[in-house]
Each structure stands twice: as C-alpha cells, then as structure tokens.
Length: 377
Image (cartoon, rainbow, N blue to C red):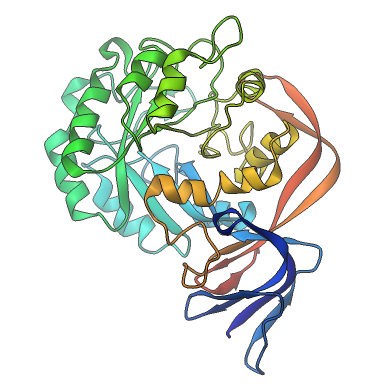
C-alpha cells in the first residue's frame, strides 16, 4: 500500500457507506477500504481522525480554458482550494479552438479536466466585464459537421455537447441552436448539456426537447424562467423531463441560482441531480466562489450531507458516463477529497442578492489525485 488515509469518516454514496474506516491507495487507484488497513515501512499514512473522506469531488460545470477565453480560470489553483479532483469544462471551447484547449490546458493539468464541446465554432468567446456577446445568436457560428469530427477524435476527454440558449445567449434565434446541438449529440451517441437563461425560449421549451441522460444546467435559476409556477408547484414539463431521465444540474455561476427557487423545488421534493459551481472569472470572487461553497449552501438549505456529497460524486459520474469516477470502490480511480464541516454563522449569497445565514460550512482540507496526496499550497 502506497498511501493510507487513516481513521476518517468515509462517506461514499456509490457504496452506501458512512462510517469510520481507512482508505488505501496503490498504483494510482483505490486499493482497499476497510476498518484497519495494514501498513508497511514504505507506506505514507495520514491521520484523518475527525475529518470526512469522500470520493474525489466532481464539479460538473466549470470554465477552465485559462488564457484561451476571457472567462477561464486556472483549474489547478481552483481545485487545490475547492476539493475538486475532476473539473468539467462546459463549452468554453468549440470545434474551432478545442485543439488549443486540449494541448495547452487539459493535457498538462495535474487535475483531471473533461469537457463538453460547444456547438458554436469558437465556444464562449464574448463574456467579460462590460462585454456580453451571445455566441449562439449568430447561426453562422453553428458548426455541426466540425463538432461531430472533434467529438469523434477526442472521446477520451470530451463527454458531450454544450449549447447555450436564452435571451442573453441565443437572442432572437431562440431554441434553434439547441436543435442543432441535439442533432450532433444524437449522431455521436453522446449526451448534451443545455444552458438556459432568461426567455425566450421558455424553460418548458428547453426541457421538452431534452432526452434521457441530457443535462439541464442552471436548473434552480431565478424568475423569469424558473422551474416552478406562480403557485409554487413544479412545472409539469419539469416533472415529465425528470421521469424520462433528464438530469438537473445546479450550475450556480454569476446569475443562475436563487435561494427562493431552491427552497421552492426542495419543498416539493425535487432535489438537484448534481451540484456544480459554474465557476469562472466573473463569479469566482462571488457569488459562486467554488464547489464547496455551493455544496454548503445546499447543506444549509436542509439537504442531507450524504445527498450533497452524492450530487458531487457518483451522481456526477453517472451523468458523465464515467463509472470509474465518483467512488471509493477498490479499482476505482485513486481520487479522494478530505473535508471538514465548521459550525458557526456563515453568510451566503445567491445571484439575485438574497443572503442566507447558515450554521455550517463545508471546507476542503486536501485531495488525493491518482493515489497521491495533493494538498493546498
């Protein structure tokens, strides 16, 4: 055994485990999970008493094409502080610039980066302070044939298609870019992630088009285009989409998460499938901050800790169709996250300016990546 995390509270929803035990790593993978794992003189042993060990956290919605887009942040710096071992970039690059993203960011990264490819040729190229260009407004930028070629050539790191629709992203083109992206995803046999902002199109129009395994991000966005009615009930189209297997992702970001929406949906028994930060340059200093802050908000809204962790581990792995991630089963990828939960009074804010004073905060204490301890600097 090369590394043992000794005596932590292991929460692994993929195995329905919640108890004190050791986690051992060897050869870059999880090697053992047991109440007491024997060590050798060559084993590195880290004392985890009083801490929580989970599978490596997966942030389902990030923008980490640093230097290639104005939104991009540094994945390694972000993951060190946020307990994330797998960052999913959601459409920063399109078929016209994905090669640069792969060569200069994904391949050198110590943190695993997987990506959704944008249907727009240059991805999300026009968002910054003082600039808001909806890349899906210009139908000349829709690049289905090239997107299919790039997907086929990069299946090791690309996990599906991304499209952004709404008033700010597709303008008067409405839902048309989504229909094009769905054609590509269907042809490639891969899932799609759809962004939704203000109407048009409506929330109903978007979810009605999504297939089993497709992901709607920004699922708990504020009005307009909230997922519930004026009477506080879940929209019928949303309930129907969940029944047929559409997945609902938080994607907090700069303008896409409201406490009011989350409270309303959770009161109706509707939890998100995946929790994600949608971290990028315009929200990393607030209101999203990072993955553990987004998870903390749901914990303080009343979501069970094990469900919060599931929504950031095995649920995300299911959405990505990467069962080797999000689990501490022996043989799984050797990633783990170490967390602590602090008690006190913590001020959280959503994207419309509402504040929530919570009594707990989830804090990252370090991660294991590829079987090696990779602590914050």
